[in-house]
Image 1: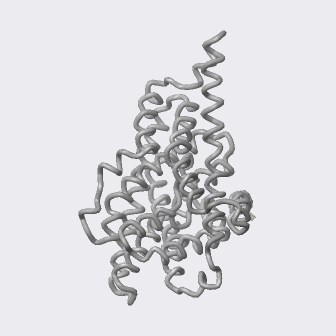
Image 2: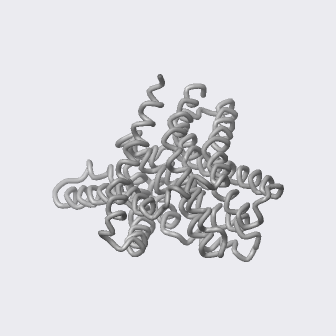
Image 3: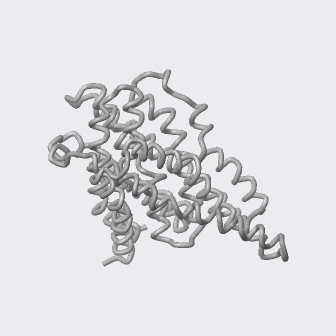
Length: 329
């Protein structure tokens, strides 16, 4: 059995194990779930994700090959999300679910949990590998660009909800805009090795703090997931056949499409340094922001919550299986 399959299965299992404390707290009503979920969401978006970006970029020496791969990962994320979204939206026109449910399904099938699950997953898969996490933060930037533009249009059918401003002015994207020039100028934490005395202590201390915050993404994101799972009625969860359509698109069609695109790219370039990122991003379950957007725009938020939960649970099996396909690239 492939080592990637075993490592992937263990990593997904560890992620879900991190969700157990949140699930227990939610079931025991030890915290106010609504306010705690809001607090953790703000922490993850506004504080921890930017720290992940800075930690990965500022712990990587400038390399033109890495910069080229940054562009490739960004384009791959945009193209695959856009293509799957277009296919899903077209298919939903012929489904007997209605416009609102069809939009939620198409959105859920195209947008995966890139920030709150893919980054922690890759941190477990490749501990200490800053370059892999660097590429993952690029996928987050591309994800936000697509989510606030074509994603919102697919969900609502209304061009007024397309917001390029919000696609660019969000913490992960802004931190990327700041970190990229520093990376290109080779101004990073690695310079601490050339310093001495107080300067060395200060730079090393900032580096350690940045890493500590970046490492908090996985545990807090999974505690957040556990709190949300605690409010789900599992008897109703699996009885709605529509959730399996979104889960099937996101967990099977999308990663297979991602593998096909990656294989095509391998004919023209060396995809080995980014292959794990591309397949992991493609294989992630439905993103949690479909719940947020469907609530904001008064769509079928119950369906959104159910499809995110079902896809997340099923991804325990599908993510390791999809990683097996890396062996053919």
